[in-house]
Length: 160
Ligand code: HEC
Image (cartoon, rainbow, N blue to C red; front, side, top):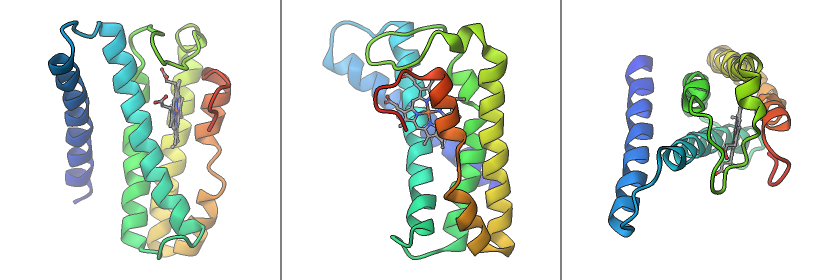
């Protein structure tokens, strides 16, 4: 089940990417450059991560009724998707509205490590949710891995 779910999420993410690209193709005569596509794709990935973290936060803060299965699903989604962050940043490109710092490509080992740390934390949260949902909710309030990477590898503006 879990793998099917993760797979569907991966398909959804790639479809999102395709939708963005084809919308641009239809709307403009000019095709997006590989750099523009890369920035768009990785920003979409970040938005999916943010949406899933939003589910966890809403339950942790009591703004949404707690559902341990949905909670674990979102944590598993973050665990899986954060593993593809380094892949999404393969192309050294900072164009348009990108807030990426050049350090990503001069310090790739640290960048990848930060993605792994987020994945590991989310996997722990997902596992804990099965036996101790309150403990898992408490852990979510303290997910520093998103901001930790942004502090190092993203320019100040709109910091999360
Ligand atoms: C390994 C590093 C790393 C981790 C971990 C990470 N991010 Fe990001 N994030 C980035 C970088 C770099 C950018 C800037 C990308 C760009 O604009 O080219 C970014 C951009 C964003 C954006 C803005 C996207 C846009 O359209 O401008 C959001 C929202 C975001 N991240 C949310 C999250 C959330 C939520 C998490 C944790 C669940 C997270 N990120 C974890 C590196 C990371």
